[in-house]
Image (cartoon, rainbow, N blue to C red; front, side, top):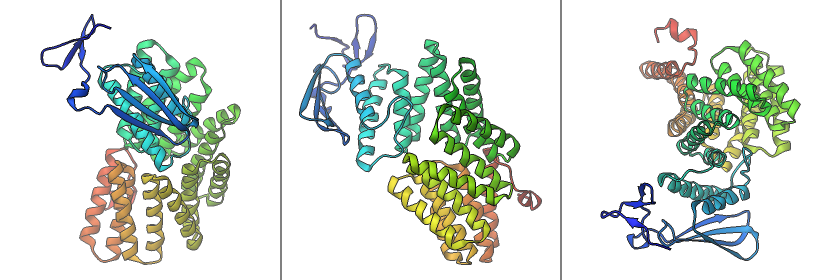
Length: 414
């Protein structure tokens, strides 16, 4: 094989048609071995690369097999195939994802994501469906910015290739990230675009998911009529195609609407229906979400003991899964119980812990809710200036992301 032509500064390599960034040589101090540990499998897969590549040997620890498998790799496509194989071993197959990751699996995902970023930074294009899978893995591992980058790259490639189904799927994924970051206007735009494309190509699955996401946005904005319409349309599609987890998500959304309308009996019924499906399918992350919803309804009904029990059960699951957003919501609920029992010191501690998590993960909706509750606690303590400061900050944040402001705050000059 002819040695590649490297620029005098060592930073660029000639491919025969263009200059591309030159991968570091082993002499430059770059790691020569990267270990990708896969707890789903046993044994090792050794992928050997050209000595001019960024890594000369990649050790994939793979437990579904026995013994070692050696792959001689002279192209990026071989390595991308290895990434696909590892993702499937972890339960990421197409748009399907595992409900949760163990700590060791999170480490494996981190390493796969690191390698995919190295490929992308070298200008190597990864298959867009693999990009979506990588985005799903990053999102489940809590790496929201990384997830967004994978989804955006997928969207760009699908559009370039004229793949409308892929475009609809990646638009929906990008919308979820925008919603997570509190940008409801951008999230709505992306989900609506996804629905239009999904209807045009007849993809019921993508259409059902996007409609459910639009229902959640409408619910956050207080448009309960539109939220119910969207969730019911989504529910019908998910039942039609046999999507049990999707069905449970729509039931959860309808429960929130019933609760906002004051129909707590119907809300709890819908929440418990969703909880049963999430337990049946083994989705513990969403099981914790349903527990929080039931706990809040029991709180409103005045059964503080049952509400606290459910919040604590959800907190244990969220901490076990490493779900920081879920942990923050559970802590917020426990703060509500402490506040209702007039334990103001404990309420403040829990609300401030929830606030810190919302800020850490970039959740402005949760941040605003925590600020309002800290404001209530400060007022109950007689610290009215501090309470007013918290209200002012909470109103500012929720206005920025398009959340309706309660009339009391408006009447009192916030």
